[in-house]
Image 1 (cartoon, one colour):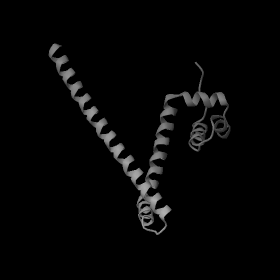
Image 2: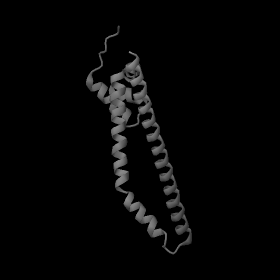
Image 3: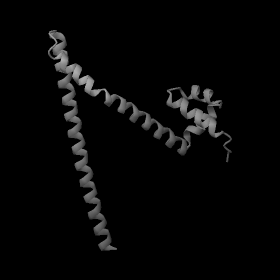
Image 4: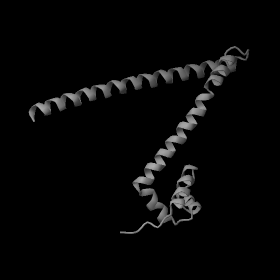
Length: 135
């Protein structure tokens, strides 16, 4: 078994470089490790978990920033609905309708998934109930 001699600082630099969008080769170089060592680090389950968690946190932070500007974006579209420039008014109306339809589709899908999850949970409970009666 090969011993891991990569320091925690090097792993952290590798992780940060990958989060910053560097290629694996660039990230290895920035972390001061070889491509092979970077590859081994990236294959380790703990490193993958940390990288995935960090990516999720970055994504959530980005969504939070995006969400904070939604009111202004909607206000802008609403202003454009009656700005006196027909092309801008039509574009704003079309965009608002498109977003509303996408939102409705997403909500429908979320409701369908929730119903399926509930159905699966009930089915699992019934199977467990039958199994305990047989056991």
